[in-house]
Image (cartoon, rainbow, N blue to C red; front, side, top):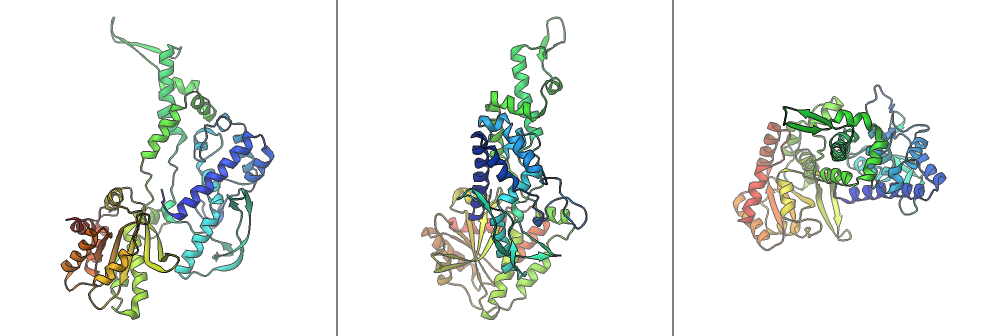
Length: 444
């Protein structure tokens, strides 16, 4: 769900590791498979979980857990038959694989991208990094082995920390074994038992001539129990799993909102007054240009989440010959930015920040348009302090769009105040009517 270099790398690492484990198990190279799984431990450095107190005390991967995971996989008919395609499939069909274990395995496998993400965030937010910290196990998809190295990470209370992009954090998995069993497997088995006119079939009479047959889910549950049954039935009727996967591929697995995160953490929701004030307090001109860019990023990142995520500041392109002030990944699953991505190239949305004392003109438009491409995206925002003639500048943006050089939406201080007011009134706000209307003017 995160269409970015970071997201692509994480998916690749997870698939590579899991497919390697299945390959070894199917080749009966069990000692090698267990050895690779044996490296997995509970990754306390992310501090994701529900432990009470100051110490992380999870109930997922621990001593002996990796052996149990290997044992469950190696003895599983689903693993040997080819039913398992991805790590999340194990939640449906492998006894002892829980969402906690899936989370811990995932974190272990993507540790190296998380280390780089942590370093980038610490550098941007001026959080001190401690050099010479043991990385923990890192998975190499090229060599298909674990390795370690010394890295720079933040240290708190004597323990290393790994930061995780909040947009990939969930409090439940999209795949759920109970849901799969009750609404897919049981439903299919009811039909199987009816068609076979088995002993589970009940005849319900409403009169001498009015009768119908049924098989209750309760009777099915009594006959078929456990994930081993799910695996066996799915092997016989693989279309059940295909149907479940198809449904999940169309479901919206929504990220936690900022208010969700604040509630879980027991912290305050975004202070919109402080965020907008920090930007408005910047004096127009080159002296405060860097402060203005950082304030703009802080405000927009909060405003646009979870539609636009993973901000990269001073993003270098064209072999470092050009830079983009802020590049966002477009992860919208509803609202304006989802609509935009369906109709125009918009895997990313670019932002240029202009803390000018003068009006913007064609050079600023040409600068942002020069950052667009069909693969990167052709939608951007240009943020500035104000316009003497906003309508004229919008017409210039329209000319750029008509020339097929991309779609640029201008926003000034007044517009940002308006966006903040809309977000305050609706925490789930994603339609951005002001941006949508202004984008529409580029299409007239």
